[in-house]
Image (cartoon, rainbow, N blue to C red; front, side, top):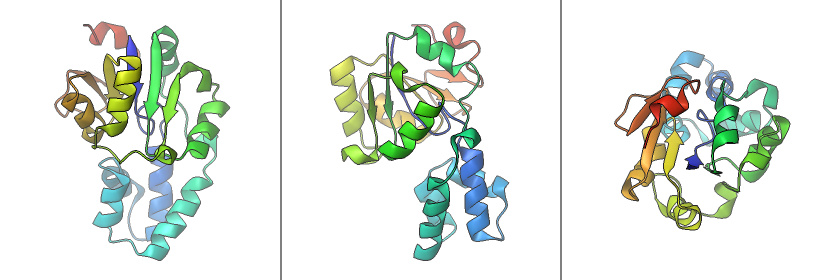
Length: 185
């Protein structure tokens, strides 16, 4: 199976650390509320809270300094990575930030290609990056934690799987423990 993975909230549990930093910048908004908005998208959360340029810059500075220890991989995701024929990532995260965490947990070698914000593709849900990866690797399944992550896959006719999200998708998982029991072609 050839799998296209989202990064934040799919491979690594990053949103609690992001929500903590956003709450810190906003002051009067709880981490839980920030988490809910960030799970839609960072752009959405920034707009929702009407963050100023100064707040956005401070938030970006804080998240760039988060240690990998605060962004652990989800339980059992490594088991799936080991069993897949091919894994690729498409993320809005920058190359340095993505590799910092992937390298820390020893995950980098599981991926044939890691497409980041630095590659110049339009942001999701634009399908350009997915199309590039699909043509190159013949992707069977796209896995993400947000509807935004699977919209481009659906447009290209790929199977889709949402992690910890019940929006419409071909497959849904709350845990990676039983991935191959749930994701059956």
